[in-house]
Length: 113
Ligand code: 5GP
View 1: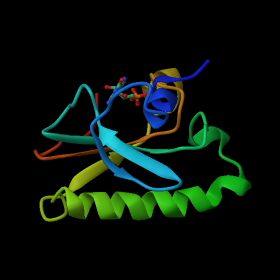
View 2 (view 1 turned 90 degrees about the vertical axis):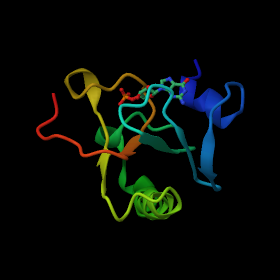
View 3 (view 1 turned 180 degrees about the vertical axis):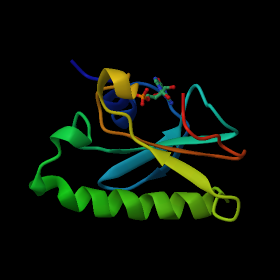
């Protein structure tokens, strides 16, 4: 069965897409936790970072370059921002498709809840 994010990739579900290339897509989180909250995901279906294999490592280089571009595009660099990826139940992962939260636009507390 397709996950929500696969349906966003295939345009079966609408999303506010802010960046896309052959390997990745980035869109606004539907339930933002801060004024700026984006999700960067690979188009390839990978559950989370726990199951990434050496064959997919090139995706990480690419995803981090997309995060850099997006943070510039969305004017988050000067103030700073946070990159988060959740894994499994205790990690708070609710969608089983690898994604990186890019969160900013306000000071963020630490440690997280
Ligand atoms: P997780 O909890 O798995 O780390 O993050 C999943 C994120 O996906 C959540 O922040 C949630 O708000 C977001 N999300 C879930 N469904 C949708 C959707 O249909 N559209 C968008 N844009 N974001 C979604």
